[in-house]
Image (cartoon, rainbow, N blue to C red; front, side):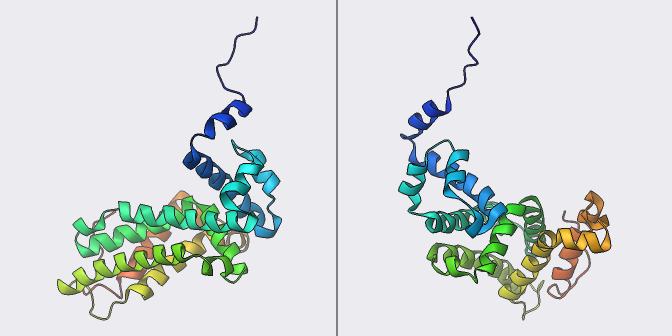
Length: 228
């Protein structure tokens, strides 16, 4: 007699998950991010998403209403994760310059390691921000990111480390721009100019350059710090 592998069949796992709505939704959103990032909103199919989950198509519709509702929640979850990771950096205990540098490095690395997030944002820009505009949750979360940056800058201004005209929204834009472009245009940039900057060494150089580029116009004394 063949030995059982011990793994529950998918149908059994689906039935057991009915008692854990949070796990069901997390599973659906994880799969949805992959599918939406790959195929876009118009190209994604709920049938495909459901088939890749541990639940059913009926439960996808039950929790998210329709494909557009699922896409909107997927955007919200993607932004929630990055914003939560920024909070988890616990930057308030660092001196202002070290806090700003850590935030820049985190953003650069996060975007580099999470290309699906970048693709989702690109897709939403193709839709002119239509679904983001429908979500007060996303707007509130992203205001929190600028508020965190403002706290860092205020401490730096108060201590005479940062220039008095340092602006959190401008700096957030600059950090996002470099970190985003590093992923969004990777394919075309590499085909035109070669892939040297996509190597491990090239990525470290770009990360250091991003730090220097942001710090130089903000810090009163822009000499490199020893924070990594």
